[in-house]
Length: 425
Ligand SMILES: Cc1ncc(COP(=O)(O)O)c(C=O)c1O
Image (cartoon, rainbow, N blue to C red):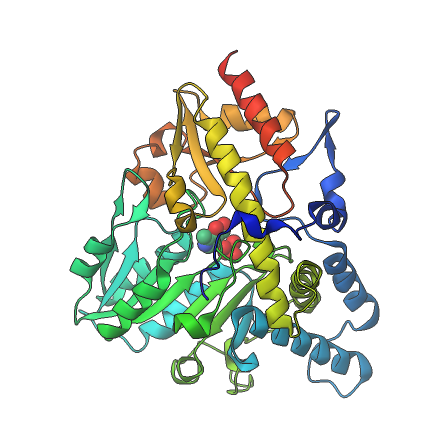
């Protein structure tokens, strides 16, 4: 159940008004317009319970870990609770969850640790579709004689070229680093299949689930992946990163750490003081999603089931929004959409896309929209290889629209009207 069924009819129990009432920042106004946060892929807003958890931690539990006194013990309990929540989120054991500053920092740390066990001539497969945070940390290993190969995309629909991947995968491949979903064009990669291919070739897989995490239920057990990383600030939590690693890998690979830091899991991968208040917020973000799931399906029992129910509903909501958007964009003259636009292949995309309108600079469009309270993103969003491959990097990249579960059909319609207005100026 790594990729939930994208079925718009399953949306009956999704209450977007309740969802929006949980996010106080959605009330922001810009020049008299209500803000429409269509910038989810750069970071989502947070519900009240995340804000409270961070505040409560600082009010009642602020301390370092390992002390023989009340607030230190409370800190450990809060971290333990957040770790258990993330274990449900990933569907793994608690000690397989590692917290870190952000996905990029975690990935540099893991790539360096893995590199200690590699030798010159070993190969790593990367992709053109990935965010640079799942590219540069591995590409840097060329310094050690590691051979980097990069899997291409199919340009027409911005999907990964699996034939190219199969051609480049060989007995020297030690690892495939691949995104679960593209933060630029929304493509969802067949990561279960890629994991099988990697393992059949004797390689590991490192999955960047940063963009996927707000859009679909993650199940590291059913994927059988070696590592998977995400950033809670993209799924309604605070600005941090979190990693799943298979226990055997977390035990075997040697992270760079200070000597007094315990060699037990998960401590050996969390050398130094963590951002405790934000870890408290991560636990609350998962709890928020679980609460949403319990509202969507009152029969669920465990937190994991509640998370599955939440995603079942949010995916359906997001799916209806993205097709409303794509249908509208197709009617705007000179609008080119980057990403899948075939409704038959809805399950292969998330509710994120990029576009260009004629020769207009994406920053000009984003600024025009921003003045009207519509928040989008422009540029390459660090998916640099893709921007270059699509030939838009030298022209300001693209404009990205990312819809999450708190967005509404009205916001999509407002965006479409504003884009029409921009085009007809
Ligand atoms: C797909 C993807 N991967 C990785 C990252 C980097 O994440 P972080 O900001 O946590 O380092 C991002 C950030 O936008 C992203 O969208």
